[in-house]
Image 1 (tube, helix red, strand yellow):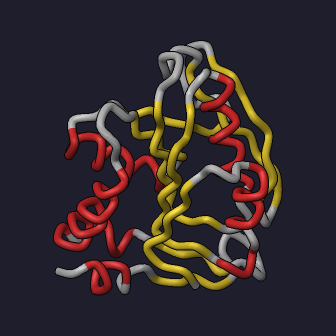
Image 2: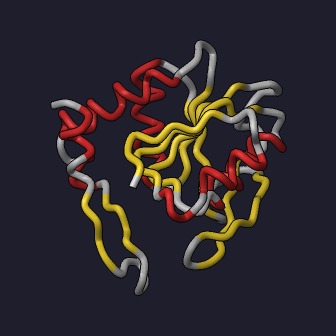
Length: 175
């Protein structure tokens, strides 16, 4: 299966999790082994030697951990508040339908780690910005953000490139 066929399996769900939000459901893509492989093979192009792959809860986890396994790299989970069992640092952030908190273990990275950050969707950029801030607070550098889908009209790319002008952002689909 080619990448375009794989990405065509993402289905929009109107009014989820609340009215006015068009949720992008990646579960049909994930349930198709060839589609899932096509996406992780594409993401592999953004892995630098010696880098660590971080994924944002929840769907970013899936792609990041599969990719980390594929390239034999470390995987770092960035989770919602209260989900990690060890000492954490936290970062508040806003999204298009509310506010939340992300956390990372304090020992998740070694100083000067280069990090490929993966999530499923780039919308307003708030979630990804919070994840980048957490990585930086631990002494790491996010060199690239890779997402499956970017919702261009919500301005997330502009938000991130304004704050982090050296950051590479790649989206497999822009809508």
